[in-house]
Length: 119
Image (cartoon, rainbow, N blue to C red; front, top):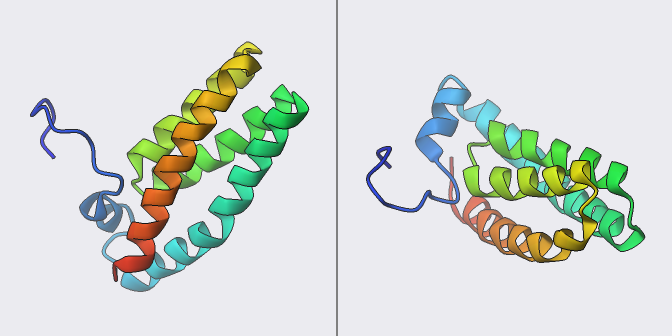
């Protein structure tokens, strides 16, 4: 996607991910495998933090997911995790459930793509 072309960002940018990993297919497969294992755990931690009103845990888990998604070139999941990290830092936990719904949708789409594609 070209910057400023008006198209929405893709859930996953395989070309950027390939550049990020230096074209190493084994490394890409390893990172995807780790993300497929770790992502549901992180989302669960985020969900628990919101349910418990634990802003610090929300910030920590959202920050970790944001970093993983960024390395994976998954900009939408990264952005939703960043939004949750921000509301946690600001102590605005009342905003978190709606953002969690957006994160859940983005994660579901991303995981489907990662499981379907071969990289």
